[in-house]
Image 1 (cartoon, rainbow, N blue to C red):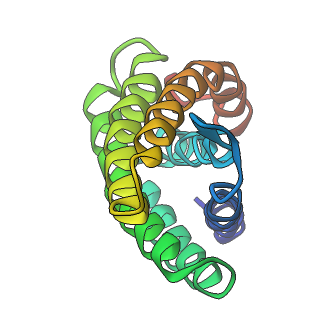
Image 2 (cartoon, rainbow, N blue to C red):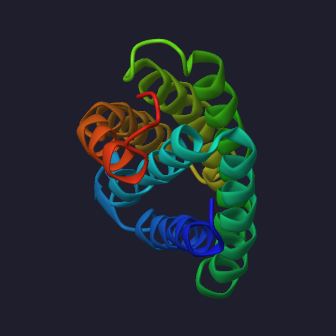
Length: 174
């Protein structure tokens, strides 16, 4: 991976975290916030990096995205949201990389789908547990809605994943 690709991936990751931290503060209804639609794209970035450049670089992108996203979020989001987001982000991203890498030789869709699904469950539990625990029972509805959207997004992002991997690394085994 060249420096330009790495920087673009890391900046994309940081932007997704920042956007998600802002959007999670705006509920759509009792079950969902706008952040549920933006955050799953982070797994797409990680999975494309993992497939095209391997798990070591995917982890580096996650760490840079984590640090940058946390710094930006700390200035624009409430501290509780920033800490919850950062914690959930890095744990779930590293889990996604590990699951993806374990499944990388199976059908092209299994690694990104199952990695994103496992990471989404962990991310939701950590984020909502830290960000909203003790604020009332409404956050449980948000967590359930958020997880549902993340799982649907994992499916919806499979075609863009396939397209990006094909364009970025035509010789990579998808």
